Image (cartoon, rainbow, N blue to C red; front, side):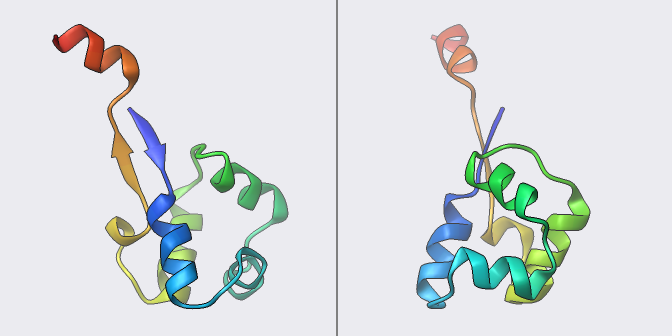
Length: 75
């Protein structure tokens, strides 16, 4: 399964908050923000910091998507 943080980026737009603002407010390292932008895995501790900062649940900032191989195999 692939990870998507598109919900997070849309939420930031709704809150009129930049990615840099989130990074500073949540105390996230720059390299971790890069991993988020690339839809790569980050620790639950990082996701928890983001959720606390934005006052949301984890399902509001990320979702799991089926891999392309999973879709092909199910046809």
